[in-house]
Image (cartoon, rainbow, N blue to C red; front, side, top):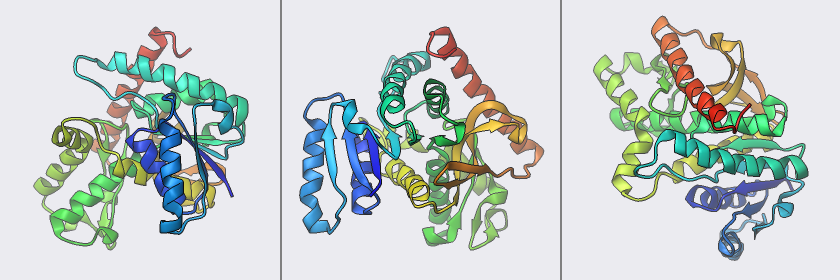
Length: 312
C-alpha cells in the first residue's frame, strides 16, 4: 500500500488523515512538532478501524525520519493569520515551516509528489518547489478544488439542485483575487449563465471569494477544515490511483494564460506523475484581466519572501 505523510495534526491535517485511512487509500504517517498530539490522533484512528472497517494503518510521530519513503506528502502545517498580524508576518512564519518540511522531504522522500495546503497557498507552493528542487509537476497546491467546491455548493443552494449536478471552475490565486468563471460552471451541462441572473452570479461569486472568511467569522476561533481536507484528499486519490482527473490546482505556469514562473490555480490533469498537463481555457477579456491581477498579488508576496531572505 502507498505511504502518505500528512504534515501537521491540526484540524485540516487530522481530518485529511482520517479520510485517507477511511478510504483505504494509503497508510499514513502523521507528523507534528507537538509531542504526543499526532501519536494520540493516530491511536484513536487505529481504534476506529475495526468499527469503520478500514485496513489502512496510521502512525503519529515527531521524528521526520518516520516520514521517509513517502509516495505523497500533504503539507497542512502552518499558522493561521491572527489579529495584529499582517500578511508579511504570516509569509515569514509559514515560509520557515515550509523550509523545514522541505529539508526532510528532500532527504527522505526524493520521489514523492507534494501537495501544499499551507497559506498563503500560491506563495507557499512556489517556495516549497524552490526549496525541494523537484520537477514542478510533482509540487502542487490545493486551492482550486476547494474554491470550486464552494462555488458549486453556493450554485446548488441557490438553484435548489443536487450538488452532484453542479460543476464549476475557479481560477487564479487562493484569496480575494480568485476568478470564478461562470462560462465553465454548469448544472448537468447547462451553463449557470442560462439559469441565473447576472446579479445572482455576482453575489455567488463574491461569496465564493470570501468563503473562508465567512466560516472564520462564524466560528470566531479557528477556520474551515472539512472542505479543505475533502479537497486535498480528492487530489490524493487522483495522484495515487492515477485517475487522471481534471481538477483546478495551483500549478507552475510556463507561458499558459500568458503567465510565467508562477504558481496559481488552473485546470490540470492529475495522475501518478503529478500534473500531467495544464488545460488552457479560452477566457474573455474581463476574466483574463482578473487572472493577471490575481498573478500580480501573488508576485507581491513572492517579492516579500525575497526581501525576508526566504526565497532567492
